[in-house]
Image 1: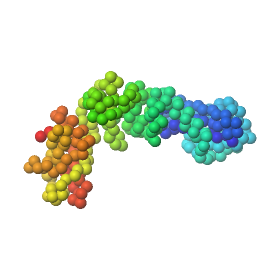
Image 2: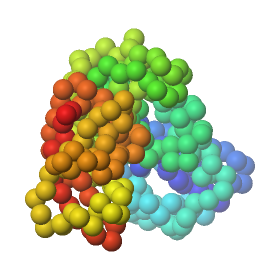
Image 3: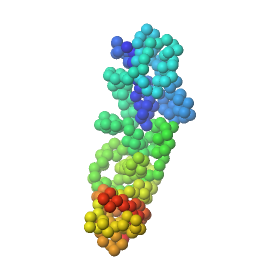
Image 4: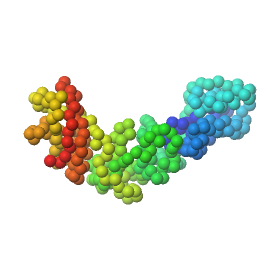
Length: 310
């Protein structure tokens, strides 16, 4: 049996790997569709499917595949033009789900390929969704100028998220983390450069100061500007709030804790520690803006809150 499978077609980083396995003698052939097929007009022409045919021709010659052999082809879209080519050239083939040795071989080959591109080995080996778009995007954003060259830049998802506004500022880390530029550990209480942005959800990247060479954008991240907060308010206070009223609430910082106050200055509740610390950081720098506070109690309401350091 001859089996054909791919790996990496859903990875933001790198091209796409194509593998062929002769299960009779375990001969294996692997080749990468170059990145240019995902970074130029070739992508919109689906020229990568033509390149798959070229890879298979070279692979068949290398491992001596004859037309009397049974061939199993992965069901994916990568092989649409290959299936036509196999039929026109009288090969005995069928589409099926590829599992077992070839699947493992082609995935491991692709893993080694992206490791050679610079993606940390631990990033792949110890992550359940190592090639998830937003996970890889964090790695790219840690060194955008150099790593965007490794991306499938004609993807719609890259066009949408690849150059979004980011908040980039000096910070002191209050927890242990890893620098996505050099891959080394960042100790607690170390001065760092923090990058924050929002795609499908807020994201944070911390880098050693020496690992960041770009410009800073020391403004509050966008996701704090237009934020929907879940707040816990004492029941005896919450009943006094009219969902239809235009009552203003205020956020006041105290020792990196953010309390929620009414017009009379009475504390109604506070934000959770992580969010409170983040808001306090920017409030203490003198920034202020509006946001939406939302409570999910029985008395469901939305109120516009003026965030400022009172």
